[in-house]
Image (cartoon, rainbow, N blue to C red; front, top):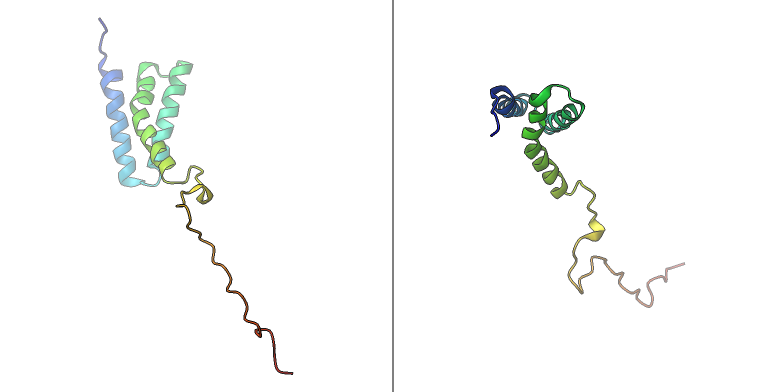
Length: 110
C-alpha cells in the first residue's frame, strides 16, 4: 500500500490552485503562461530529479489547466485555421460578378 506524504501529495495541488488564483487576480494576461510554466517546470524538474515529488506533483497538478488552455487556444482559431478552409454551402459564391457593359458605355463626347 502506498504512503501518502502531506507536502508533495496535498501541498503541490494546493500550490497550483493558489498560484493560478493569484495570477488570475493580479496578472490575468499572464495566467496561461504561468500555468504552462508550472506544467513544463514540474515535469522537467521531475525528469531531472530536481525538487523531488513536490516539483513533480506541481507539473502533474497543473497539467489539466494547461491542457484546457491549449484546447481553448486551438478552438479559438489562432491555431492555424484558415478562412479558405471554411465550409461554404454548395452553389453559394462570395464573389461579386461584374455587370456586363452596355453597348454605348465607353462612347464619349469629343
